[in-house]
Each structure stands twice: as structure tokens, then as C-alpha cells.
Image 1 (cartoon, rainbow, N blue to C red):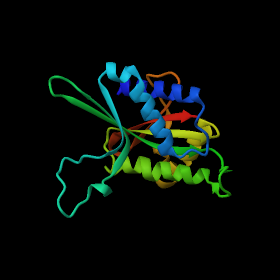
Image 2 (cartoon, rainbow, N blue to C red):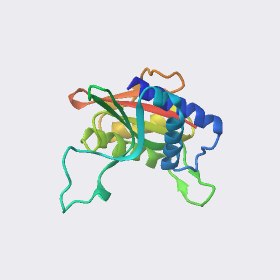
Image 3 (cartoon, rainbow, N blue to C red):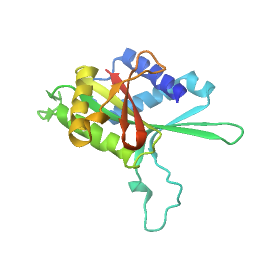
Length: 200
């Protein structure tokens, strides 16, 4: 897990230096830019880490004729490392755009709602991990594209307190990469979710 965080941290720093991300960018585009930078980074090859994006989630069962692969749950990032003894480590990250304030995108007149991004982070991110829709070894990624990390996290915490429990809010944590802002949330049955906030 630590090397995966280092890898995303290195890609994040490089992506910031290119200056191509703005608040109008959709999260899939941000994620694809990060994936490309991670795949180009010698750190991934030297550590034997394979990064894939929009990875279908393998539940350990074969599909039947009544199922289709097109509707399988997909997750933003899968990190996989295999060793010669056939042991494999798999780690996941699910990304969501976050905004601290409402704003109007430059290409349309529609308001982008900060509160809607906070709700989506909880409903489509945290709750999906807690219900098993995403694997338990999933870390949340927040792309803060408008405003500050602190304000975006406060918005997320307001949603958590409303739909889950005030005891499950994000609290600051430590990370193995200095430029990443890390948080942790603790849920029922002592389940813990790690969160990384990337401000652009």
C-alpha cells in the first residue's frame, strides 16, 4: 500500500507541474492523466506495480449467459504486484471530484454544486466500500478542483454526519508521501477507510 501511495503522490506532483487540470475537468480525465504519469514513472516498473484504470471488479465467479461484462462494477484504479512465489497484492482507489463552493463551468451556464459533489463522494464512494460494492482494500481519492481541501472535507463531513454518523467523519491522518493530504474514517465493525485529497 505504501508504494502505491508513493506512486500516486509522484504522479500528482508531476500532474500539478504540467498545469493542465482545472475545475472544469471531469474526474475520468484527471484519473487518466494520473494513470499515464504512473505508467511512465520508472518507480512503477522498478517495483513491479501494474496500474490499470476503470478495472472491472472480479468477484471470483465466472459470468453466465444471463450476465454481461458491460455492466460489471468498475473502479478507478487497480494496483497489482505479483511475486515469484505466486503471491499477488491488489489495492484499489476510487476517485471523485470535490468542490468547496458552487461555480459555473466555462463551457456552459449550469451551476456546479459543491454540496452535490459531497453527497456523491459519500453515496458513490464511501457507502460503496461499506456495502461491499467496492473491495474493502479500496482507498478514496478526492480531486479538490475548487476551493480548499479543508472546506471540501468539511462539506463531506457534513454529509457523513447527516446520512451515516458524526462518529464516521474524516479525521486527519499520516501518509507516506509528504505532498498528499491524508484522512481516515472509521465505521461500524471497526472498518476503516483511508482517504487522499489532491488539490489542483
